[in-house]
Length: 328
View (cartoon, rainbow, N blue to C red):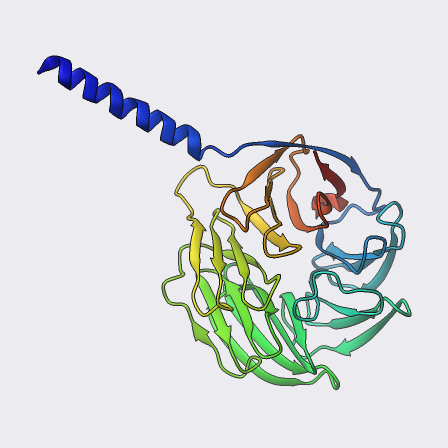
């Protein structure tokens, strides 16, 4: 009996050890170099129209709002001061991972000012200020714009506005701060915030909450296709949908301790994705989020956004940080 008991214990320990080892994430190495931004304020969002032309927004929350542009893949950046308040979000058209030459994008930040940038003619156009508040993100479909924000985990604002006039059409308020918004198709929109995930199927006129998704401060959402989407949270959650956001399931749940603090998620297609976060966090997947590989060798800066092509990309973050990386 003792021999059988010892044998059973050894077998259990073997399978437990094997299980733990098999769950560990394989780490990958990256080479990187700093790109000179010539600024020392935080950079919050990045978007590339193609491999050469890109845009970054940021600034000081209360004193300056800047947009940085590159036409040589990030080797050099030109900074334009557009506002005396910081910018936080860049919005694009649905499924617009790579906008292509001529596709516009929009930036928004503190005080609710919205600017449109056309890469074709390299001009900024002031759209308007539909509502004076602290806004984190903006999304556009057709002539409808949505922007979301809040402060100190509270005072959530969700504004729907007419892109052609810059006028507010609708204002929804929430007790929780809102942090991200996107369209997955022309009429389906998604909003995230502190313990909150919302979905609209009428371009933001009405919203339906996912009442079971309350366990994180959700930070970023990305839809590489109309049906496939991903969400990350500040406490380490990763969620996925395969039906356009009608339902979400966890790829990774947040834990009470030892969580990576995720800030942004980006997928260049439905399989290849990246997550960045505080303390030098960068994760990579090539199988639609089934497995993730932490990328080693990066400085321990706080990264706020990521944009990537195949095995290379750009990270932006605190104190003017711009890193170009290549995964080996």
